[in-house]
Image (tube, rainbow, N blue to C red; front, side):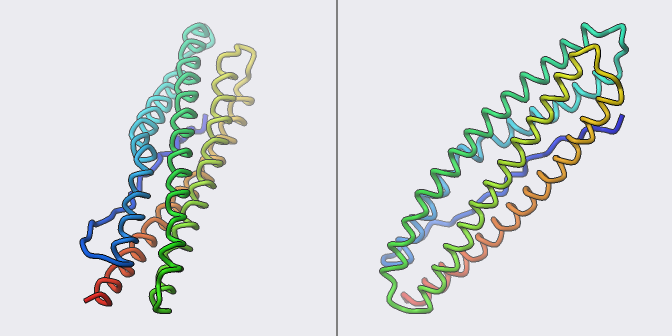
Length: 214
């Protein structure tokens, strides 16, 4: 059977640097650091998600090596995989809530933009805001794709528990899982690229603000 690849959730952190001073730069730095802190639960679940993914992959490979005469063991391991998939749904929910809190916090940048007097500063802040909002939207797309992947994986595990499932049925479902996993990988790549872009915008904006306040 075609291998069912799991989606490794890649953690791409929004790296921040503390600054001292006053005015726009200090306000922006505070908002960014608070936003980073709100994402702590998102970062915290990455290792747990990856651990479950690897364990489920191993379980799936072990299950497919079993025979029809070992259906009891197949069902037992498939249930273990199901339990793991449900745990991943819980981790994903925690991740989504963390990112939503971060987005709410980041909305405070509107006040910083309004207080900026120089048009060039406003333009930099608007670009940073747009980039971050696009990043949050990209995470929404990832979460939606990843949740759909888990749903399809759970369907596969349920089929494995059923001794009436044929090899063809399992292969077709495995193909669905693999296809959805491709969508997840695309979403992960997009999110990571946008995170890097936001990091670059953040660095550039803080550097320009620092020079303007000298």
